[in-house]
Length: 215
Length: 216
Image 1 (cartoon, rainbow over the protein chains, first blue to last red):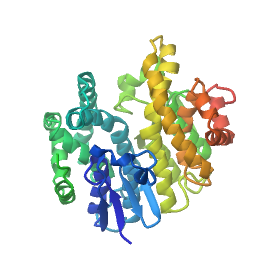
Image 2 (tube, chains in turn yellow, green):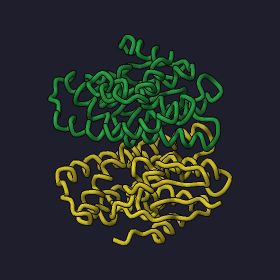
Image 3 (cartoon, rainbow over the protein chains, first blue to last red):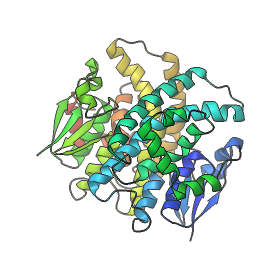
Image 4 (cartoon, one colour):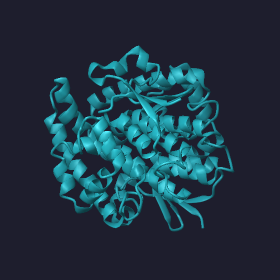
């Protein structure tokens, strides 16, 4: 039976989708249109009670939360494709650390920028300029820490690409694209080099092209 | 050599790690970093945690920050000792991860501003944002309904057993229960049952004693 991932056109799902592609796992996808509020329909709530995306369905098994899905795929398909979890428990610890940094420090301000700059005009709600300014400041502070880390290591968790790096791809693509703040990445030498490396990986190029959101 | 935890024993994120140590029967040493005087923002601590937050650990040469990553690391490293916090199979582990991530993305984002305004700001002599607290409580009610539904058919968040998914909620819940949010939990039969169950655990009681909270 083939895995099914829901809402592949949206950024949070792409964390899971890029992991599937990196690991060479076959899967199908089902579109869920967030712009039309399809995630709030009863059929969707039945599989994701918070009405958020993505969900991965594997036969009778269901799992939501994009980073939990990433971990699941990376573990289940450990022996194929790149090892995205590190080779030792200590390396895994570093992967978990930077995955959590992405979730708790990088994602929130970047999500605020995405919602206010990209989706506000599409969905007809007013952009909050104060939130935009504060979010850009906060994100800048986080990126300064990344700049220091990436001057010592090729990738976030060490000298190997991991789930921690991949988790950054979808929303950072908004940052350098539709949000119009590519300078936040480009002006930081090591962050910029890291971004070029990870965003040019074959898996990400495939995902970003195949599942582009038509906006 | 014993692992050193840098943090404040009354703060939620260090408590997450301490609770994991206690459940797994891992020896540790606490090195106090004083949040009331913003010691976490000083250069010495920034070397351990570049974002200026607590906790961070040092275990010989191995260093780590982010409380949930630390807890996962120790739960993995000491899988065969103390409480099994990570499930019995890959699929079960992923469900544990799912509900642990739910804590980060749905629960903590609401719990944190409430605790910040009702508990932390008064202590630092700062003004509480009453409007934000009331708005956040409304959102929290919606999320707690989902938890209530989940706990109606599962004893713990990830199934029949206590796991990291439950543990990771406990520190912030502990702080919330000291505010009038406790009414929201007590009004929900299954959440109340779950909270009483998990706070009866010896590790939690030890943690509360260490943090000087008496019995929770």
